Amino acid sequence: MTNLIKSDLYRLKKNKTFRKCMFSMIIFIILITSFFSDPRAEIGIITGQVDNRMYGFILSSALVREGPMEILSTALGFTGIICIMLLFIVGELVMERYEFGVLKNTVSYGHNRYKIYISNLLCIFVVIISLSIMTIGISFVIWNVIYGVNRGITSSEFTIILKVIIAILIILCAMASVYTMIHTLARKKTIVLGLSVLFVTFIPMSLVELKISYINSKMPMLMLMDLCSMPFNNGSLVTFLVSSILIILISAILGCIIFNKQDIK
Image (tube, rainbow, N blue to C red; front, side):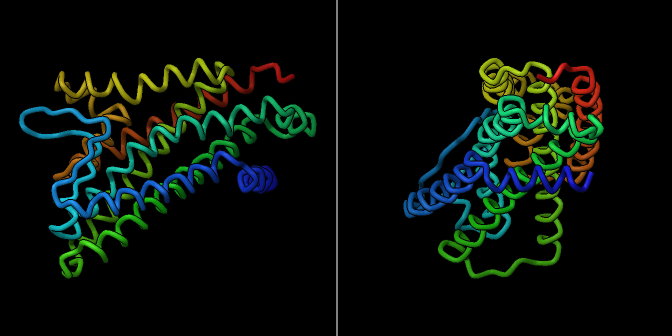
C-alpha cells in the first residue's frame, strides 16, 4: 500500500493539470485582490437567495474590511472555483491511469485492486486539500494585510475558523470521492464532466430554493453553499461532517467494488 501511495504521489508531482490549477488559483487571488480596491465590489459564484439570506460563494470587498471572520468568509468564496477545478482534477487523475496503461501494469504486478483504488483516492484527497489550504491561506493573509482592520484574531474566532476549514476540506473530499467512483464506473471523461457540471451549478441552486433541509444537509455542494455564506453554525458543522464522512465511506466502498469487477485493458 505504501509503495502504491508513493507511486501515485510521484505521478501527481508530474501532473500538468494539478500544477495549472495551483497556478490559476494564484492568478485568481491576485486579480480579486486588485479588484477589491473598490469597496463596493462583489462577485457571486453559484449563489441563491432564500428568506433574505444569500447562499453560495461570495467574494465581497466590503466584508474584507470588517474583520477576520468576514475575511475568512470572503476567502471561502473561492471554494466555488475549487469545486469546478475538482471536476477536471479528478477526471484527469482517474482517466490517465486507464489511458496510459498505468492500471494494467499495476494490476499485473499483483497489487490488490482495493488498495489500488484507495491509493488513487487518497492521492486525489491530497490534491484537493493542498489546493484548498493554499487558496484559503494565501487569500486570507493577503486580504488581512491589505484591507484588514488591524484587529487580531481571538481564540474563539480561531477555533471557529479551524472548525470551518476542516469541515470544508472533508466536504470537498466527499465530492472528490463521489466523482472518483463515477469516473471509475463510466470511464468516459466527457459524459461524467457534463453531468458533474449540472451537479455543481444548476441543480444546487434549484434545490436551495426548495428549502428542503434534509436534502441540503446530504449533498456536498449544498453543504458548501451553506457553510461558505455565513453565519457559521456549530450544529450544521456536526451534521455536515457526519454526512460527508458517510458519503466518503459509501462511495469509496462502491468504487472499490466497481473497480474490482472491471476488465482492465
